Amino acid sequence: MNPQALVIRGGTVVNADREQRADVLCIDGRIAAVGEQAMAQAPAHAQVLDAGGQYVLPGGIDPHTHMQLPFMGTVTADDFFTGTAAALAGGTTSIIDFVIPDPQEPLLDAYRKWRGWAEKAAADYSFHVAITWWSEQVHADMGTLVQQEGVNSFKHFMAYKNAIMCDDETLVNSFRRALELGAMPTVHAENGELVYLLQQEVTKMGITGPEGHPLARPPMVEAEAANRAIAIADVLGVPIYVVHVSCMEAAEAIARARARGQRVYGEVLAGHLLIDDSVYRDPDFARAAAYVMSPPFRPKGHQEALWRGLQSGQLHTTATDHCTFCAGQKAMGRANFAQIPNGTGGVEERMAVLWDAGVNSGRLTPSEFVAITSANAAKLFNIYPRKGFVGEGADADLVLWDPEGSKTLSAATQHSKGDFNIFEGRSVRGIPSHTISQGQVVYAQGQLQVQAGRGRYIRRPAFGAQFQAAHKRSQALAPSPVQRS
Image (spheres, rainbow, N blue to C red):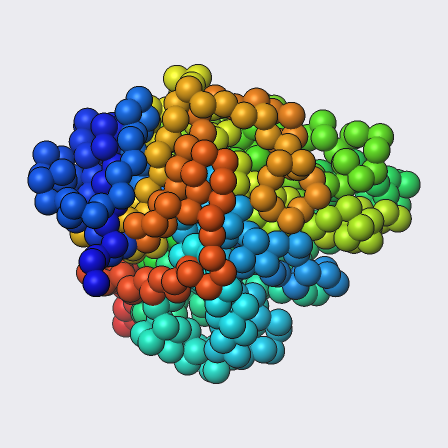
């Protein structure tokens, strides 16, 4: 049987460190050659794609999605098939989703449940596992997940009181265990106690609609939690990754810590870069509620701070927090904004809106775009250069990017099963013409050709020497015990 082969001819290959005119040969799901040798080594039966006038980019990695998530009494509209299919249509070829155990639920039980749900995925996927409670069993399960299941990151919700919120004791115990195992702690940084209090206070003021959502979650609520998590990580000597940084105060906390030499990494959502809090004041409940997510969209001034964070390298990855709820589900909170299921879509739109607002505006170069949409996530979660790189031996997950192609984003044309698009009506220039997953064309000129179950679970190895060095450094800097006479 002939090996599956694909040649991409005439494009400009863009990696995070450089761009070059080069052909790319893919054989049996891997990149076999880049450059002059690609055509020379191509089998006679190889499929050929003309990429003239286009960029050839690594497939996007969305490091923050929630497919088929049970949350706030309902389940997201997109499951692992429809969500990953939408991702592929937008040029994202891998996602990192979240296993979120219920309090007292064994981590391994929850992990196996999510793995079962994800078997229908059309694109490659991996998992962060949330720590929602603490016990010796959790301690042991973390070890099994890292050492046997290829999980190298653990999520900590500092919000959602009376549900999945971590207290400081759990943060300390989990961070220490992550350091021992060579895993990355990640945090949803919002002070859950303050959010819970402010939700009640805002409601007492008679504000019950979506406009109350950002009032109950002001920027300092996020900044306090970010500072606290960073301080705990600093004392313990463990790197930390802050998800969906939405405000300048949290971005500044990360920048200050990095200036001290601390290993702190920040993620930004495409929506927070482009959408402001005026959406919550829409008089139409359904439209305003569709934007309810946490942290909320912020006043416009915060957007510039986030862009500067990406440009300066103080913020590192872009994601979507893709978590789709339809209008009927959002209506659960019609009488109380705190009951509106939190979540928006965007996994299909992320690459295009970031190119349009970032590269077309001059904020980002094409290589910087690759860094924040794939390469940095691959490096931070230890799957580089298998992912996030166009080079020999890497997975053949690629996007042919047409910088002059354009489209208008809309719920009417999206592939997500959500019934609302947070970028509705936005016209973008720069879109994928083709998406290649595992060496096969799965999206071509608007036509999606995906197969349920074709996505693979991607194991992510534990980190090694860098974690050990950080731990030794923290121990060396620890104050000596007081000597008493």
